[in-house]
Image 1 (cartoon, rainbow, N blue to C red):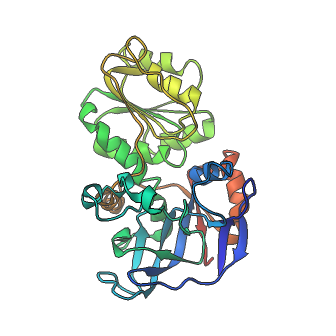
Image 2 (image 1 turned 30 degrees about the vertical axis):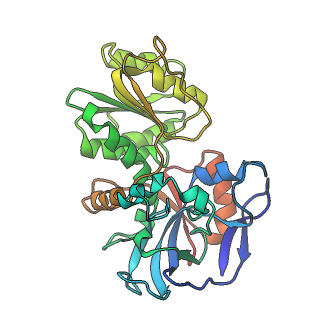
Length: 346
């Protein structure tokens, strides 16, 4: 079968031929119909050999959906031929955190060598993939796999972030979304569906701001040195009750803290390497700064339910598996509008 692999440190993704895997006890073989491409993959491919916590080659892709092809011994509750989305942040499944469905925060996963598909375990950018346990498959129940596969990360991650800030997002409040690409344009839709707040979107190009307006942002601003002052002007000097930074670079983190209100939530989701300065007289009084990671299994069910209701619609660009290396180039250059989805079987 074809798979997209990161094979050598400092190299670029390659389309290679590898054997079709066989499911062992408790495992599921998934015929991948759609796989998402994410900036996290680029981050992994920028690490040095000392930084990589897993061996290469690695089949990429931590957003996956498809049809169950075969079941390993002892698998229950999963139907051959059924269509499922893959819950990506795999945990041990046995600790108190995993018992709550919060496998994204499993404290034992790293020590046990458990890693997400595409981020240590073989991922979804292949014609077939192994899913380690039935609990990591969520039924699509009529949702289109291509439109829905980004929701496993680009939907789940902003949903987890927005859900945590909802108590602050009362009528009359303002929410700021910095970075309106793959995750940010979904966050705007989630905010419009879940909160009565005014939504202000920031990005560096008019093209991405146009998408932000199309999916529901009340106001759009260029993300530049004047953005924080403009947000304070829009809010009558108060600032935003919730700020979501889906870039996470030093300039955007600076905007996030500068435009936040007293008692606000500042959520840094992007992995651009920036860090917030926090302290008395630096951040607004009683502002909380969070750096969440992915979301829980139950939250993925909730995100998919929102998609079924029509509240969330991911803007996708589709490509064949042989185009995957060029897709990563486009993503790195900022030329993907929304989310890129690879179709391994065409």
